[in-house]
Amino acid sequence: MVDYEENVNLSKLCTIRIGGTAKKIYFPKSVDDIVQLVKISQDSGKKIVPLGIGSNTVFKDGVLDHLFVSTSQLKRYEIEEHKEHIIIKAEAGVSFKTLTNIVKKYNLEGFEKLSGIPASVGGAVAMNAGAYGAEIFDIIEQVEWVDKNGMIIVSSREEIEYGYRYTQFQREGFIYRADIKLKKSSRNIPDIIKELLKERNKKQPLDLPTSGSTFKNPDGISAGYLLEKAGLKGYKVGDVGFSEKHANFAVNYGQGRYSQLKKLLETAEKLVGEYFGIKLEKEIRIVE
Image 1 (cartoon, helix red, strand yellow):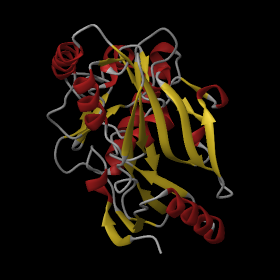
Image 2 (cartoon, one colour):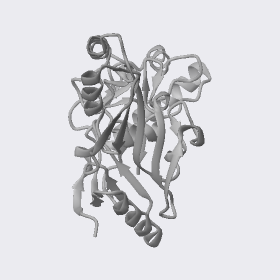
Image 3 (cartoon, one colour):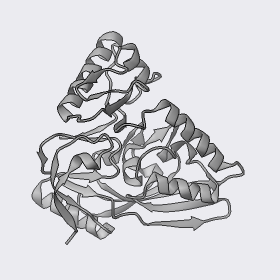
Image 4 (cartoon, one colour):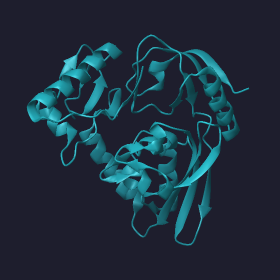
């Protein structure tokens, strides 16, 4: 039987610290455990909701009865060294902080722009996480995942459907492991990462609970720019608002509630639609 906990406070499992209670959360330790949970999902009719670090996730208030599956026990990784590159075979729960430490140790290039993202491998692959023009699928070799029938599948990057902040895993399957290929570099990668993190800290409200980028950037324009021009930078609904540092970052100023966040997002979508004729698309995942 897969380990689980009952009546878990979901606000502690997302970085914006908003949400109700999960009736039950499962903690698989292997790919076989995931297969078992997929079968439970089929039998019960409950959809699987994967839980990583929760940096782009918001939960509704109240009691939620989905099949929540945490990747916190899936933190193993292997390093495969080649002459000019290294492949990191990382389970879904391996954090970007861990990957950054490996990258700095071996002086690898290709990951440096992603290094400050508060993510784990599974969540980052599922949403094709990115920053500064780079994205995780630039360096993915293959993904091992479990489909809705409980079959373990290994797909190369070319076989996976993905795009800007999107992959097929947002609608199907559970990611177990990803192979990440990084080149050995002649540049000083730890120094480059240090500078990028300094830049990130300057521009983003990392001192407050936040869900990160709230909306995807529409073609050719920044969502943050649109929100700021619509007068939403620093705009609040109760204890939830858009940061005064970066208009596309929703933050929790204290006792934020899901109802306040929902109203904030609706206001943003309405105003940007009225002013610019652009329909904003959420980057955050809302679990209701």
